[in-house]
View 1: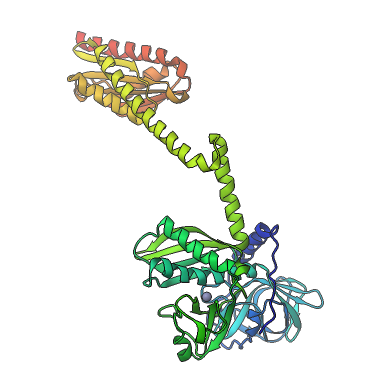
View 2 (view 1 turned 180 degrees about the vertical axis):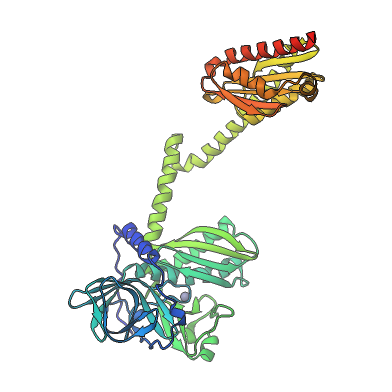
Length: 481
Ligand SMILES: [Zn+2]
């Protein structure tokens, strides 16, 4: 059995490392279509499960023309290096490929941005950052420490898979997963949203197994034998090699000791040695991704601490603004929202009362009801609706213009009844422009309904005065004709 190993943990460096990882993995895809290249040699990648740097010889590299086994890899070249053996994990089974560096003894450096598996060949995609490489040269292959975060997330994914079946039922099947240093994503079959209490229960179960510091073991077994392990999980439709690798939590002898509560999966990924190395598991979100398929995104270790610190900061900022302890913030927010709803209702009722008053104060000029008034409404939508209501209540030819100085601005909405527009050729646009123009504002709209705005709410009375005069002059003229 392998010696117990510690994982590199640098709490301070988390943000920096994740940023670097994002940068590395997003910088440049594949400079060529590796999938169509034939004749790639096999790589011995058995060292990928040991987390130490290894020494390996350069086999060659890949260009658009194919595999190159001679010459020199010039500085600045972007390519994919092939080693005789490697400790880099080539992207597969939902786990991202490693990034890191290949270092030669003469100081030359090839930065590995991502690692992919093509058949049995591991391709280290990246760039010759410093110096050069030749075939058969020996390099030290160093995997980026963000791999340890990936391992935490991968082992936690297996625990999550087990816990979901435990909490939601045996119908839950894995429908896909992505394991990265920053987070894990797990898709599974389930017909409805997972409730908050179910999510909390899943978190408790996963963390219980992390705190219990259980062993995580991996063994390679003939496929037939592996399929007989009680409770073994495999992804439906996936082709598994024979022999197959089995990863098991809680026992090192799944053939004899696995039971209903043993997370056992066919899996080629890199894992922790013990569950406690995951540190802490926290679900970030649960959502629907397709009919009958849900997705859980979660974090572990450094990512979980970072996530909780961010949530804690947000909660304390809210509580601080409300001047209550964090625990009381949700109640206080609910009470405030209730107050806001109440105030909105009152203000709407006040505005309706205003309409009745406005109607009572209407003048009749040349057989047309003229209503020009201020209403305590802020929203333009509500002002337009008030104009509509006044036009209807007037029950006949009507010219309505309402103004508001709510919300620190001046707003005017004018409406003319259709018969008035037809018979007197008046336009609401002209009217509202004349009123707003009197106080340096402007506006526009249709002949029956138009709106305008001005910067100075204190000049609303002047605007209304101008509006009243404009419409009376026009209507008096109409009467005389
Ligand atoms: Zn796995």
